[in-house]
Length: 216
Image 1 (cartoon, rainbow, N blue to C red):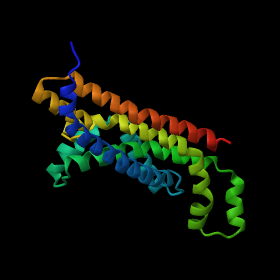
Image 2 (cartoon, rainbow, N blue to C red):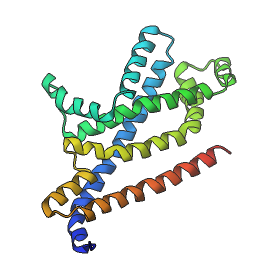
Image 3 (cartoon, one colour):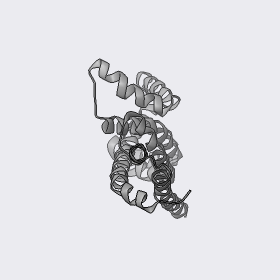
């Protein structure tokens, strides 16, 4: 078997389209998971049972079912109920929703790790609840959990190929289309594998660096 550089050159337009879609999913999915994860975390810490219990049930269900099942449900079942999104939007929502249940636990642990004295100081200063959270608690919690959130971003990147199952044109799906058209599989799949390494490995190094700096 010989390496065909012309096949690589032919694949490049599709490849870059796939890279852009993959990065778009990663950025939007991360923002959704971070935002919704915080909402879940606050719900899980609520003193109201009718808030805490439903949130707990929902997050446990999502976290303990496969992402691919959730992806297929959103894409194939919801349209039967009149709710339909594009494949790209569905994939982004699915991956963000799935990982939000994991980031919720990270937020929860970070909030619980804030010393009790910080809560007491906020109370002594008569800070309103929203100021206590935004100015005292969350900044300290996020500082502790930033590396863990970064690790979930990398995990989301590695799960983006699952979106090929509903036809999202991310990197893997683009390589499959190229291979189906040219009957050459080695070059497109190898390029995609290398691309994942080139994105994920520097990101993992950045997370480690951030973790060391925040630990000082």
